[in-house]
Length: 324
Image (cartoon, rainbow, N blue to C red; front, side, top):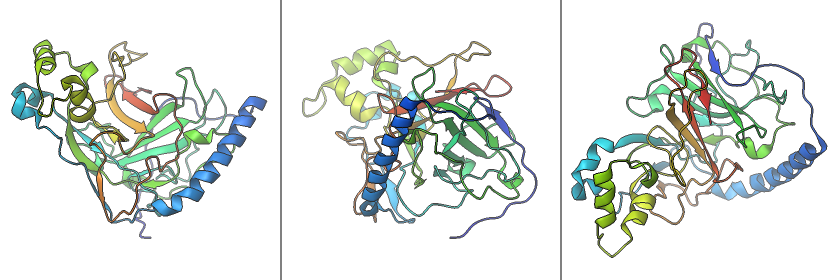
């Protein structure tokens, strides 16, 4: 496998839990960890028939209706997301856009540790700037986003995120191995996956549409075939499912975007980690050239209901804090 080498020292900005400490595990946690380990072994055994070649190509089918032809006023609402299409394959190099595995983390830098559970954060998603959506703002002077999280249940009911912004060229030598996960809930630890970024235009989901005239027009619309217009909009024409960066989140009900704990203002949607990469039951399942069979959840994640985690960032505050 080709691996690139970069020069100079690392400069890191982090936001999230604390960084160091010892570890402790309750009996209930130990039972869950054991169950997770058994489930992970079954998942790994099943993944063999879902292997994806490194040169595979993924493409989201065109929407069943071009809504801009029906309602021209949706054009300003369109945003670009990048669907990442995780696939089980040989692990990419540590400096690549990837899910899980070994990150482009300096060997001479202590690995971040959760101050609540005193266990290491785990690598979740690494995104290079050249794979990000057009116009996405990285922290000034950086070109690599690294999402980690504490792999236990926190106050939000799931893992707690940490984001590191780096410059690729500042890492002299990456760590040889990912962190120890023996005390982690493995449902929160992704199986290393190769990512196949695909830019896609999307619209806000139905619960986010606040332009009253558009809402009323969609409700009064009669689509070809007699489909329910609101259901068609929500499931087929709005925000894409799956693991993605930028664009719009998908809400199950009334949107509740978080407020920054520091400046008390609204935070920006950053990305989603999902457990259903196929968008089963609708037309979002991407075609995959050179892939025999796609697994809906190759990373083997078991996230709290509804099965995904939205990550938000505050770009107004100096340290760019994040929450999930």
